[in-house]
Amino acid sequence: MVCMSDSPRVTPTPPLEPGMRAPLSAVDVLAFVCELFAFVTLAIWGFASWPFPWNIVAGVGAPLLAILVWALFVSPRAVFAVHPFVRAVVELLVYVTATLAWWSMGLTWVGLVFGIVAVTAGVLAGRRRLT
Image 1 (cartoon, rainbow, N blue to C red):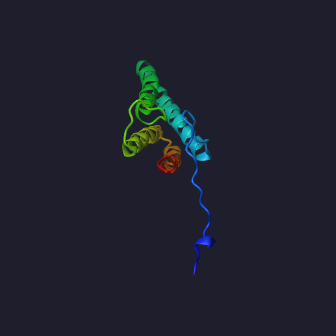
Image 2 (image 1 turned 120 degrees about the vertical axis):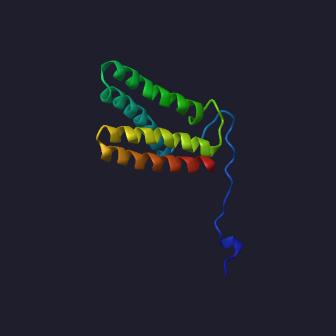
Image 3 (image 1 turned 30 degrees about the horizontal axis):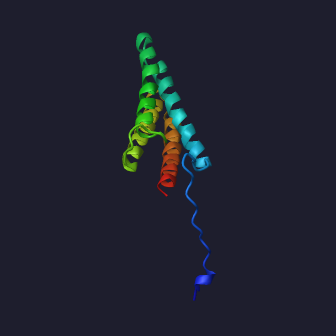
């Protein structure tokens, strides 16, 4: 029989002061690196996959569009406060576009590995935000 005194003591953590943030973890850093890698991937795809006049437009426009969407919905200081499900879908769409960009350049394994790492990091970071 388990007594109440045998259970571990759980003490609630005090709320953070206004303006303070929780310390970063390895999952947060990995999620940030995945974001940066996705943006760089879209720039590489734009410059490498299109002929001359359009490679400038796609190489600059694709990552800028992804960064804009990220800043509006997913970033820690997002412009629009959206439901966590919407935030996860937008984050997933950015990762999927980067994965498809690698696939379209003929580097399927790079896209597959990036997709697995990015989605795993996103799920872990998202679960941490919900708790």
